[in-house]
Image (cartoon, rainbow, N blue to C red; front, side):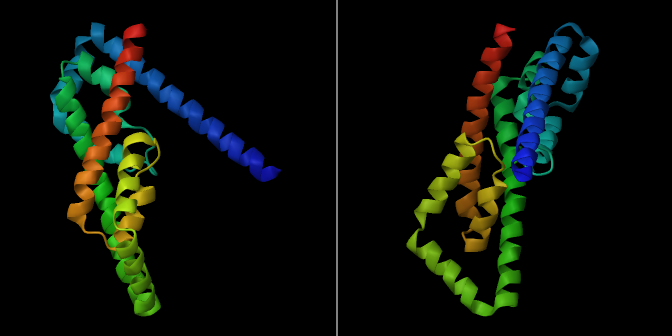
Length: 191
């Protein structure tokens, strides 16, 4: 019973934090509409600033706030919709790349620790179900608001090549951020 209470409390706190971040983003966007100083700060850092924010937010296990949540602020500060979405998708994909390489390093550590038997098993899984994990990763990245690291690290462990993972990560992140942006803009226009 105690475990259920902890899980419920954790989910409640995370939900409240997410709602607070979204509310803060909307507040900052409204503030930026009438405040030249806020617009100048965002414009001064521009797309490079958005890229850095999106890389940091791409490590969702560390910072569970998506950069796309601040889209209204970015747009009211004079930045364009499509380049902003592309920069955010690229930044999150870079963070996914770091997670992928952590999985690849983990593969080498496992090979050293458990000899070659485990690696041979991983390779058989990859050969037998080659496209299934890649398809699942795209769908996960595009539609599930959870950290992509959940699937990226295991794909690195399985030995998928980086050039197979990167385009799928970018396409999934682009789809997710586009869907999120469309909903955010719709909500922003309501308030």
